[in-house]
Image (cartoon, rainbow, N blue to C red):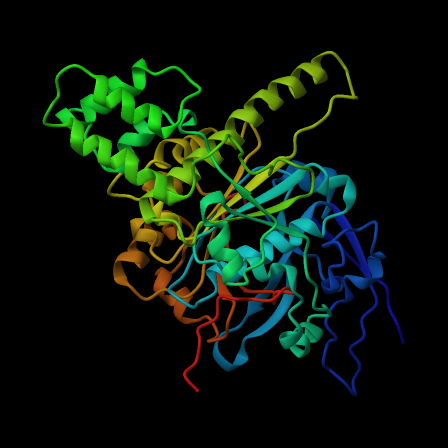
Length: 461
């Protein structure tokens, strides 16, 4: 005998037909978890949903207005502990509003994997939503270029989740001066990028060279850059240093710094990667770039995103006021940064610190979502942790990192955070998930990637 059951959750009615019988008590995985375009109620009949999904990052008003539209299939809710743990309700992530998301976990626990899963889901949204979004991944390890390739090796695991291996239309960008190295290593990329020296502020140079603006070398740099008028190239900066009156002790050292900058491979004509394109996934591969220069690239790219979205937001607001519906919309970017503690550290300043902190504090209004992945939450800027509305933590063991998370999450915890982490099944992709909007914590397992994962450890046999 079949029944139609009605659940009411967040004023959404969900119908389903139970398939549990006395002979077979195993519940089949919900067809909704095939996620062809995430959990979209228009594409999937209501009867496929056995349980109301958990929607992370969406407030009550949006839940009533949009239901589960515009969400990303993150994974499933874990119920129980140890051998009794099992997967139940779909866990969906809101993609309609901007968020600050922090993903943590020790090495090999699945941070980069989860970041890529979110990027995959953004490309699978229905066209009417996907056209208003884009994603930008800062790849510090050179592992995301394989998102173009289907994960055929994980076919059996994907089949358990009613998913299939898929390669995604990712656009990989590498620094112009490093393109030959990538080509020689047979690493696929779509285009190269470069920045003109005049696109950097004097304080960008101060940070990337590790100088103090109150000491002679830093003071000389500020003086030289202030007197230059764009456009100019590195040779012009060196010439300006040589022609500056005085500063004889400092000039040779500063000249050498700018001469060495030529070797970074990032300078040329102004050719920033074209990332603010509807529905586009862009991967910025900085894996061969020196550490301090990576922060400079993150600063330049994030600054460009912020500036363009601030301008676009003003145009959108003006169009709303004047009731104009034909204005061309600049997509809302999801900026995803791996090893984020190197760019937004807690105990120092990098070239990217100012812009990233500005996005953390003010990015909601222009519509920028920031996803920060780090294996050391203790070393991530406290502003990023405190402002995060979604925090996903894979397994961590260092006491200092647990304390850093406790400072953010303890308000919502009945027990110590270590207890929640220790209760996670020892499986790849398990995590605890804090939703600041609902003030709830969930144990989840992130769904398997459909594209090839290049971040696994090599073996010696």
